[in-house]
Image 1 (cartoon, one colour):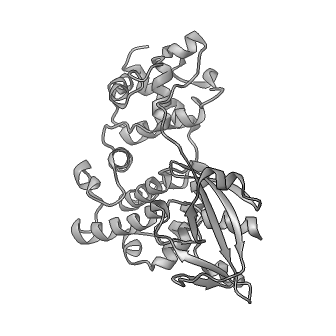
Image 2 (image 1 turned 180 degrees about the horizontal axis):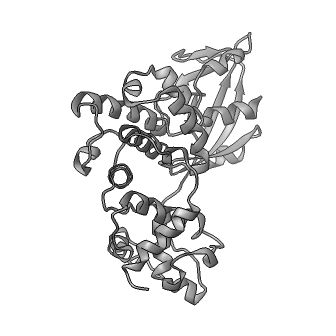
Length: 328
């Protein structure tokens, strides 16, 4: 198969097999840009199937860039509640304000300007450029990386480095349907070239795949440090059985969100804890949490009490909900 045939093969597969995703609907140019911006923020650290209902709800309540720039924080967080990594929502609103005020209400169509917006890094800027503006760019997400690793049978750390993977992207060639093409390659990774048990019989480019020829589909990843830390969550209740919460100042990934008072403890204290214990993975941290029920109220009252009946009116991160469900 020649390089010229590869885009045609991939796009033909995409036209017949792509998922019906809400941000792929045929809408006006400005709406497509807005849909792409919101979906790309949501898809950071989150899988497609999880994002779909959140995206639909978000768009129904915050339908365009102008309304996003002016939305009340409480409403914004309610629309985001459960997706986690709440800084994404804050950065999305900040970006909307900057687009309205500094870019005349139009999403920038170059990488430098996009990366000047809060929460937009190299990958997100390239994804927006490809999908929203039809630029001949193939963003390097986890799905595309996996496809490349298998196509070229890349097995050591030098081979799977970002620098080498960027070079290998030339395999895909170019097409005038750049928006569809970028999504098509990511779609092949998501639907066919799965982490385990890939569906090679359905793949439009399996004839080019070295892993397919060798029947070896193991994916090598560069090890990322996953820190294991131990904490004690202190659960204070007053006479009305209301829970005591704090605005988070402890973890970057839950900035200002309500959490139970927590402090880091030694591994030995966690192992010897006789109460309930739970594990939560947040960001790159593997958190082991010992839960302690307290009768006396905290000396420093820099938090607030919440009636259980009012919890539905409060935006709680999944982190806090997991602890709450455990104690309830």
